[in-house]
Image: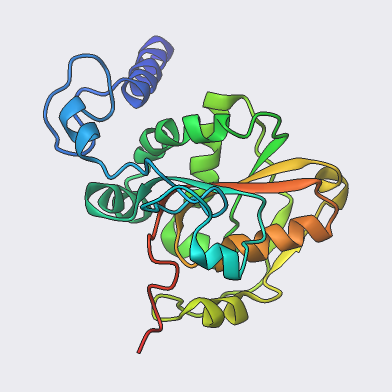
Length: 241
């Protein structure tokens, strides 16, 4: 019985790291890749980005929004614009397809490598109530998969102390006000003097990453950067008249 349990555990582990079908289109793959070549080519990769916020720009250089108000992190990078199959992958992941964490982490790995010298990964925390409602913590799961690929430890030294109202319809100012004081560093010694890399699924207005980065810097972090799977190209997509 123990032998069959070990075999089953091995097969589950193998299936987790070796795909038989593309995670986007569902077609059969033969090289163990998680997304087939055709679907990878079709994903909305960010080729030219603002060196500060990492959003897609048409010309090289700091975007107009960052010239007016620079984000709190030193730099942010995202793999894709929040469009098409990239946005769909993130939505599927957040709705419960947890195996996609490895797929998304593999896309994040080259971005994390740009921050050579980072000491730890910091997932954007959820409240316990939100975690129970969703059934898992998507940023933590994503950070753990990225940790396995980069050998950077996951640092869970921040709590989200209160629920924040739905932010989908809020602009950047509304989101900032919504998030004020919601994060709390529980282990300042673990943060002090460290170069930290925030991990999240989507960079929308930047308010969540800004608030978390500000809390980490006040706790003594030497530098804070961030990586996300997707980012919304328009910095203020909500709250417009």
